[in-house]
Structure formats: structure tokens, C-alpha cells
Length: 225
Image 1 (cartoon, rainbow, N blue to C red):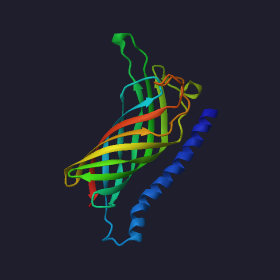
Image 2 (cartoon, one colour):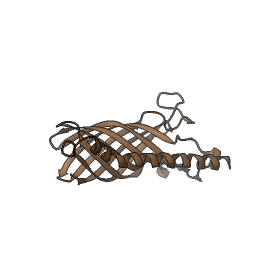
Image 3 (tube, rainbow, N blue to C red):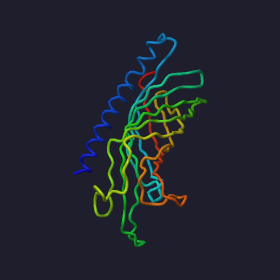
Image 4 (cartoon, rainbow, N blue to C red):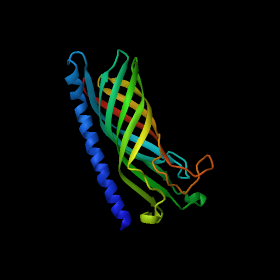
């Protein structure tokens, strides 16, 4: 019962943070237009859809086995002839997955699923048809689940207690396929631990926090030009 109450409270906090993120994201273009003439600052925007592959450093396993959805929207504006600033809001699935391998006598498996709404804030540097990007993001955890061969872990069975927010860093590359279609690949990693509690040792041989690492791929359709 205590676990359920704590989870409910954290969910309510996450929803409130999500509302503020949505509010700020929707107001950004209008804030820019109110400060400068429309002709002097042009906004572009569109939709993105793709997949993420991820792992959790510190969970005792290795491998980019967890696949999740990635989708959302973005707006950007130019800072100079070669530099843009882009703000995104997206839903992304992260976590880790250690599959079973019966042929080698491994029958146990583990899956950790994390669902975030995150807002990356990226500086983009254009060079021909390529655009390089980097910057931080703020994410809100909207759902987390742990599962093994015995089913879902609940209460004291859980190995992690995940934070309701995440701060991450991103590095990515865009390639212009068509006038309004962009291919993107992005690597990200949490800057602060997504969980302080782990029952495993890290690669450095000490107990410590768990960090999310993600490699994601998407196609972006530009609506606003």
C-alpha cells in the first residue's frame, strides 16, 4: 500500500511537470514573435517519428537490447546563417533488456521499461545537407516497469527507485533527404543518475547510481517552413 501511494504521488507530480512543459513548448514561438518582427526571425517546425535503442549503465547487464518508440514535435529558429536553436517535445521509451539464452543455459531475463516526455534544447550547426546538433534536455518520467522471468516486480521486489525527472545530454546528426524530410540519428546519456539505488556493481567496480544511455533514429517531416 505504501508503494502504491508513493507511486500515485509521483505520478501526480510528473503530470503537473508535464503540463508546464507543454505550456512552455506551445508558447515559445509566440514569445519570439512578440519580441521581434516576423520578417527578422523565422520559425520552422515539424513532426518526428522513430525508434530508440537503450541500456542502463549500472544495472549489471550490457547490450543495446531495449527498443522503444520515439515521437513528437519540434520548432527551431535561426541564430545566424549557420546556426539554429531547436526546441523539441517528444515521448521516448528507454530502459534495458537482458534476454534469456536457453541454448547456453541462461533462462533468466530482465526488462526495465522507462517512458519519458522530454524537452531537448539543441544548438544546430549547418554544413551543406548535414546539420550537427548538441545540447541538454529535461525529461519527466511518466511510467516505469521492471519485469523478469517471474513477472512484474512490485514493491520491495523492485531493484530500482527511479527519479521523476531526468537531465540528459544529446549529440546528433541530421541529413536532409528532401526539402521537407530529414533523417536524424542521436546519442544521449543522462547527466545525473536516473536512480540512486542499484544492487549491482558498475563497470568501475563500485556501487553507484544508474545512468540511461540511448541511441535513437528518426525521420522528421517539416511542416512550418
